[in-house]
Image (cartoon, rainbow, N blue to C red; front, side, top):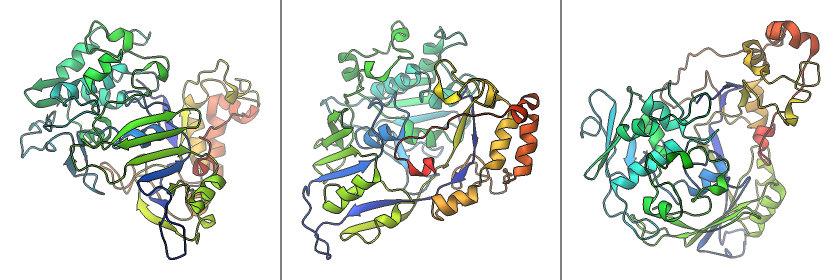
Length: 448
């Protein structure tokens, strides 16, 4: 799968904040209304609760590590060390979990872990979950993240250029993931250093029995075509259902209000959570979120850097600041082959001053011009209120492969003009253009 997009305006937004209501604080706040429930208000709501479909922050914020768990996870703030989760240990060369050629990772599956439906997790569930994630492969979905390193970066999709399912794709994935006793081995086409980093987020395990009982893929080659590239999320069996093994179970998802309620899993393989319930509510406007926090109707809210002064000093509210994040923000994704039919965001669809053609961003001079125009230092200073650092490329500081001496684009109107004059044979500069950049509602940082 070709992502067909280029990244510009990259910087590392390294510091996050959380606003937490403090029950019974010295400022005279009333006792917390629901002491056994954590209520979080944020922007956006999930697109799907299916880990093989979801590729958006709002979805993963609900189910990842709350409902579902991964084989391994990062060790605290380290991105080069791992701790076992659903695997009994993180594979290394020393413990025999990583082959000497760096291609095969073997995971010992943790014993005694129960799914929310009461069944016991097995190595077959792990293999099935990985195969389901890779082979569902919806358009624009996350499957490529595992397909690329496992099958090789030249083969990142399950379909050919005409959209037909590759006849051997099930066989390729089935060979790459092997079960032997209580272990699952994944063999990559070639060594890939960040593979464990990928599995720390993209190795969620579902109950095969539960999925099949609810009409999902049974794992066989013969039935794969029916479940490959589903058209929409709500046709998937795990869209509003879950049978996972995390600390919370899905209680309800009110799609009309964007409210998800999770209840404690008392059979969790580690100690049960101290909270009885976790509620995530969609509230796109900052004003209502602020009021809910002040009145004790929310325990935590999402707040942008620009809005931080409006919550500073509220009695009973604590600002947890300077939490490091590894994220490139903001970023503009430029599609090199835009779906033009019925698309209002490209205007006329022509280079006539009132729109852009579908291949507008395929010209490298267009992309370079925008890169020279984005003032990253100013964005950090004004939008992030100084909390961030300029990156030298697409990989943020702290991640494997970051180059502190990497060259990047300087802010230069003159260079941008020169690039625009070269773009599309000079037509861009002569005729002008117009298009819309989209952002998710309530995301002030991206809007800015």
